[in-house]
Amino acid sequence: MELTEQQLVDELQNIAVATTNATLAEGGFVPPPTMHMFCSDLGRQPYAGYVRSRPYFPGDDAHTAVETLGLVASFVNASRVVLAWEQADLQIALQRPGELLPTGRACATNGGSGPTRRTSASGGMGTVSDDIRPYGLC
Image (tube, rainbow, N blue to C red; front, side, top):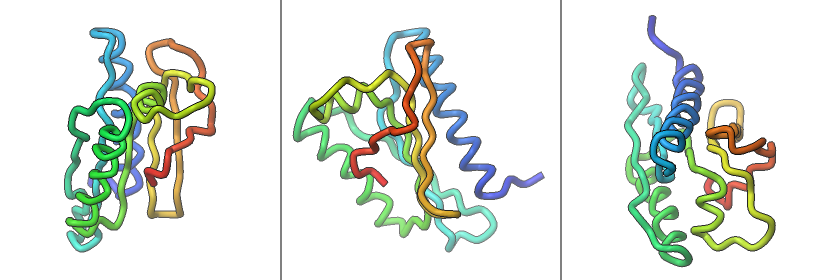
């Protein structure tokens, strides 16, 4: 059975959360911000692939690394993207002021029925708010 685009998006979000849980439990680290791209021009198999941000230093370098993901999506003419990142880690790297967000994997997607966001607590580190504050990533 072939998955629909929405089923594939849902599965990617589940995988992002499971990966974060596993890497936190096993090694105490989280995967880098990751973007999955879909291109409607590809027809029945719209999944074009994924990219991860490069390693970055806190501050302006983190902003540049994450912003570069958007350039890749534009180069492949992506009609839909799924972004996944760990909230607290990215908040620290981007040096965002305010109360530290709980540890948890956040996923955001555009396209389909409009922008959607999903969060999940990772590694038993607490509850994640529905307000994931995506920092303009979608």
